[in-house]
Amino acid sequence: MPKLSDSNRQVSSTNIVEAHDLTAAYKNTVVWREATFTIGKGEFVAVLGPNGAGKTTLFRLLLGLLQPVSGRLELFGSRPRRGHGLVGYVPQRRPIDSEMHIEAAELVRLGLYGKKLGYLSATQSKQAEDAVAKALAQVDAETLGAKPLGTLSGGELQRIFLAQALVGQPQLLMLDEPFANLDIRREAQLASLVSKIVREQQISVLLITHDLNPLLPFLDRVIYVANGQVASGKPSDVITTKALSKLYGAPVEVLRDSRGRVAVLGTEEAVHHA
Amino acid sequence: MRSLFASLTSTSFSLNLWSDLQNMWQYEFMRHAFMAGTIVAVVAGVVGYFVVLRRLSFAAHALSHAGFAGAAGAVLIGISPLYGLLAFTIGGGLAMGALGKRAMNRDVQIGTVLAFMLGLGVLFISLYTGYATEAYSILFGEILGISQTDVIVTLIAGALVLLVMGLFYHPLLFTSLDEDVAEAKGVPVLGLGLLFMFILAVTTSISVQVVGVLLIFALLVTPAAIAERLATRPKNGVLISVAVALAATWIGLFTSFYLPYPVSFFIITLVFTLYIIVRLWKPSAVRIEE
Image (cartoon, rainbow over all chains, first blue to last red; front, top):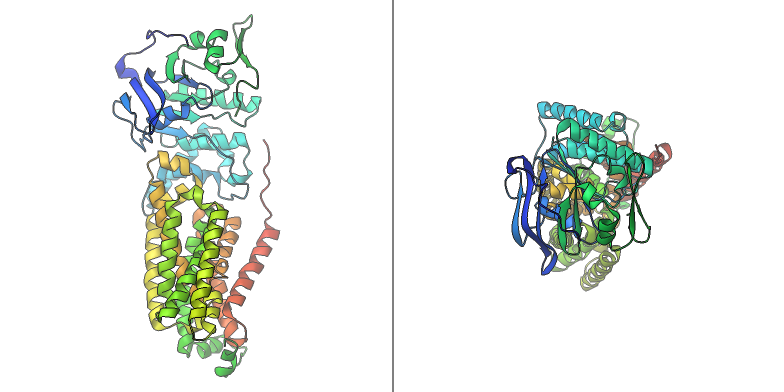
């Protein structure tokens, strides 16, 4: 694994995530150790790494669902905690039951009021309706809100999940394999949609993926998790044939065309497309 | 014994609905039946909607069987079956809830425990030297034999359930639809799962009085399944579920007063017919690719 300099670390005040010598473990099994990285405001960061390397573990630490065994982790200047209002999270998904008749907007609404005890006042209901409509508009899903969840396609569902994460106006968006089960065209659509939202609202994005191609035009940085270590670097440093092949432990080829565009190719057996 | 009521009360159906109702309500057992039936229908309608959303109908079925053992045990030691029902369903519900939502979908484990509970119930019933009608009424409901104390216990239990459901409506809906995000958002998923199993246990216990252990789905699942197909908003779903359960219970009680057949038969037949109509009218939504 190439050692990367800390040259791209930013001034502390603009970082929304800071990790220093962070070690993650489940019970007595260490997943990875001594990770040091930062995520700046408005940065679009991809998290790469083979299956089981601990990418989702990194997410669980940031969501406050898992405590680090050692090291320091700060999110918006304090220790991560569950239910942080500035974090929008889209977990890895199993498909929704096609018998689910509840409308898509309800899922978005729960992103706002899912924790509330008792009933919503008329004012709160009105505010929720407005916020839901706005979030649906952000992901170009105005027409999907009233549709039963079970009738939505994979790409439509991902947009609804994205709207649910955005409805609370987060500063950090965490997406766990959002491209799983999407075809190439919808992957590209979702990637450009996320990047548009990020630029417009200055939200930072942390996105776990095996498929870099749709993200290449938008990425600011890459964090990669492999062999019990976590490192981060600029896409141009990490997205090379040598670095990626080493990361996945299998041959991966990075091609650059005459216009400077980059394409990542991997053998299907080696790079798992979930 | 139920078939005796029509002759016992020596009343016959007239075309004047109001006088028919008055005629029916002059009997205390019918007033008790209507009161308990109304409470149970409302509570089962509300809770049932979440049972269907959480895909817990098999767990509900298993709970009612645990209740059978409890009720039979209570009869054996000479107390009201309702207390035995409550004790066994709450115990079973909390045990299932502690295993978590994913474990609750393991039908083999649940089925194994369910069969054992039925076996236990059979033992208690055989040890009891009284009438076989006790077993019959636990299995198929005996709302016409409900006492005033039972009505009061049902009212208190029902009010408690509705209060909790009202308070935790949003978090319960959140964990039912989207457990992973709810957990990350700080909703206590396991605690709510336990709470819901407790609520389900209480609801199952009071519903058994009306429809019995074997027909628990008539109030706890079918009305909610109808509602789930008709409503795209959960609030409307809860309302439709309650309306269906109430209508079926009232019509069932009214009909069984004038016809010599059991109440639970009429209730299950009404909701089943409605379910078939709704399925034919609103077939399963088809997933359309963009």
